[in-house]
Image (cartoon, rainbow, N blue to C red; front, side, top):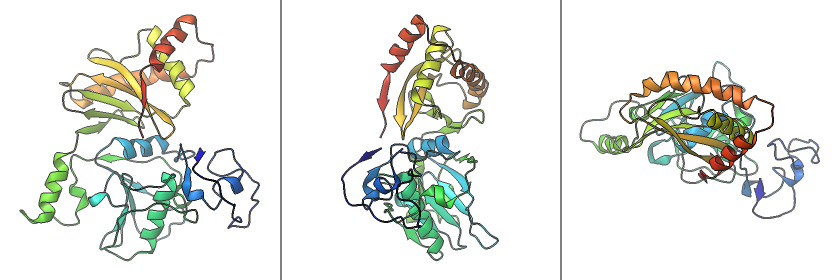
Length: 310
């Protein structure tokens, strides 16, 4: 975690110990991290750390075009509105409420602070207090705003991937209307995408000339690199015929390996190979032995095929 500037700290708003470790996992004391008066300026490199849905949140934020997932409020009761996490909302809004009071929260927004969890928490808090049919264009979390971690139950996400943005609308738009034309334009920009084999963070995408598998991994980067190196030496780094490992990128503190896939194959054809690779990978990542010379050379070569996505 990096800090853009240094200012005086503020008291613990909940009356706790300001010398305690910060809940964000940075390893710093609370008073010098998210308890500081410039907490909104802190850059949290792993904003979804600690959430069971971390890899899915990263995928929805970075490369899945149209998807939704229900959220459960931590303090939900029979009067609580339904809350849906969405990849992107109309106009890249941070949040909106429907006429029935239900809430949509956008992960892909144009403006954000250094802590995406706080941005989402601020947007959700706003929506819980807003009336029906309201829109929050942007949300950049402040030090006093809750984080997403604080407002939802910590569970896996049940993601639904969509072919278009029809779910934006409560009722069907009239043909030829401005809304219908805006929706049509947004739909044209979608890259066909599909979740693979029920594997968290694993998505097939048709990028035009090529198809890819992008797979957000929950392990620390050295563990991922070691596992990929072991598989490379065994000749088991691809997903079978028509696939090729091409590299990886970093996103929000996690590593995302990428494979080129046969463009002509239907995404469902990769479910079996992806599941088989997952089994090989799990065995490799849990291997406690030190890397061999060949595996270290393979790891060095794999490390050279990385870039950072921010």
